[in-house]
Length: 314
Ligand code: ADP
Ligand code: MG
Image 1 (tube, rainbow, N blue to C red):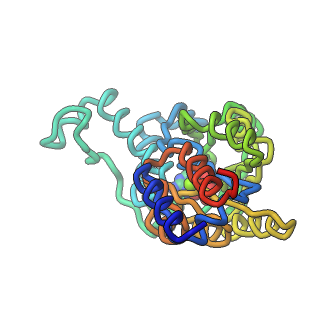
Image 2: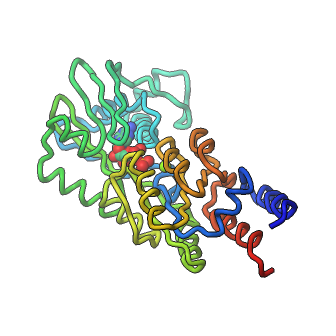
Image 3: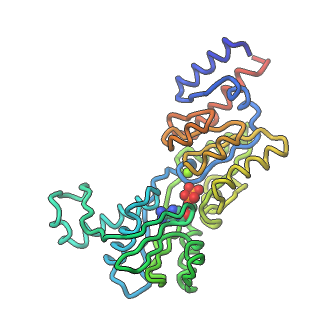
């Protein structure tokens, strides 16, 4: 392709909300053999919603939600935001008294006056959060967080979590003073175009792979919904980049699509890194392409544009 053709293609991309950082990235995309998709915020909308809150101790529901939300209040994680939102609605509708301790009115107002004081807050990436309330430790997160801290997961709780995971939800476990007191189920729906794009890529001869820090059962259920057979779950950020390198060793050109800080090592390692426009700045910096509309259709747009620009047959 001539420099003019590359310039034109870059312009066409920009008009479609696909920002391309340079001619090399534009050229590599045509040979893409694998597209590695991050799950949360990339294949899914990244708008988590709490669908279930189950208390296993004798604790009152409102008290349970107050504890969990207070523990998550300092976390930036999408799961934490979903939990705070759920607890806020609960307090608004079920405990009218909590409405009076704020000047704000209506469920739309951000009234968090009921949150408890916490100390020694720690975020544990890929696992959850830990802090202290009333001098007792509270842990909110996945199984690994519980087992690493010697909190026993009784069979009936484990079964409850397995059921959530098999219906594509993430189970969040809560321990207070070393007792497992409850579980939250969180759903994060697929983007509307996700399955169509995976199918479209296959027709173009491109294989899709899903990679996530979430657990295997939820990952498999989501992958099945979207039509991806190749899944890698319970992967830490460095592990995501390792997945890319292994596929590259087989001689393939590999693209990565992601939105999170967690994805930036993989976006940098990929031959073609594509960041979701709505994603974090760190992901956008690490990528060769930015999909400004945050639509997965633009993964196809990008590969198509490269093929049309560099193919000899016009
Ligand atoms: P992903 O690759 O899907 O973005 P993360 O690495 O952010 O996943 O997190 C992996 C898992 O760790 C989550 O699915 C969840 O179980 C747990 N986790 C992480 N942060 C939190 C949090 N703030 N509250 C509860 N659980 C969390
Ligand atoms: Mg993500």
